[in-house]
Image (cartoon, one colour):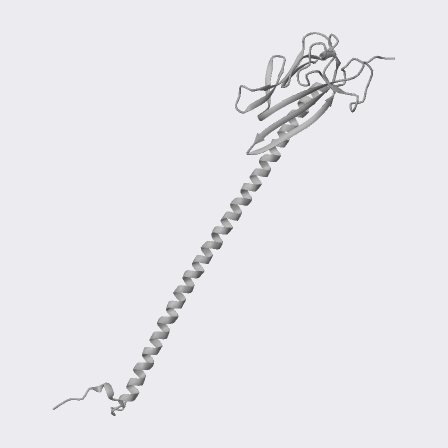
Length: 226
């Protein structure tokens, strides 16, 4: 006896129309295709979201790094400027308070070195000079045979010497002229020096600074008292 498959029977054991079964199969296939398509779109969206997150994260990291670098440059620049001002203040104070000894306050002077008397008698002196034997150059002070480094990373130091027009007080503007060689006064010009111009250039942390100042001497040249 030939048996019929139960594929076309309903729950009551009645023969189910094959058209209904075919429609269900097609509906299930359609649902499966929609599910697969939705899963594909979800995966693609996840990949795009991941790429965007990586891109934004990289951009944020670069921004933070550039901010830190910029801050470091600013701090290095401020520190180098502070150190330069401090060393120049030491030089200015030493020159301004140089003492008249044997008719002059300076015993030697050149473009990057100057030696001044620190007492009205005797041989006590203070020398301020650029040491070009170091790399980079160093600005140093020698007092009492002891040498101290005032500033490192110096690119150049230029001293300019000014003399007055006479023994009496004269204003520093208009009536002052440089020595014959502005950066190297002669022995005859040393007693008449009344001001020294200072220009220092340094480079620290990739930042370059140039500072310029003029120091008016208190005790030189000798004044005529009325």
